[in-house]
Length: 132
Image (tube, rainbow, N blue to C red; front, top):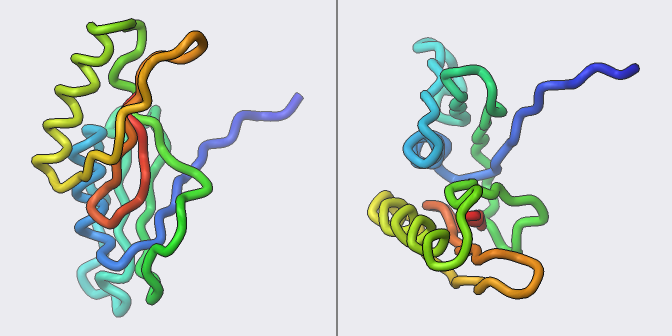
């Protein structure tokens, strides 16, 4: 029997601390401390779930900018258990909060026969994520 592994989600970005602070606000995570004397100070940042349940998020500075759609993205589960207008209202409220933090609303994917509504967004550096 294999054991369950903890994971870390890594983001390439231009401003690691700025992106980390954004995701701390989105998820209720806390910023990880960096050594004061690190020679690579500012080249990375990280944050984690204070309860230890969710994955650690790691942000590393890279020289190139984002040029294509993410192959992997986060779904922020704010509408779990809700359906129809009640779900959409919860998604819209969270969308409004995140736009105030610097996120960009991209589009609403309306409910269909198989899926409930989702709002596609971008974080402060253009990384796609969904409010689900």
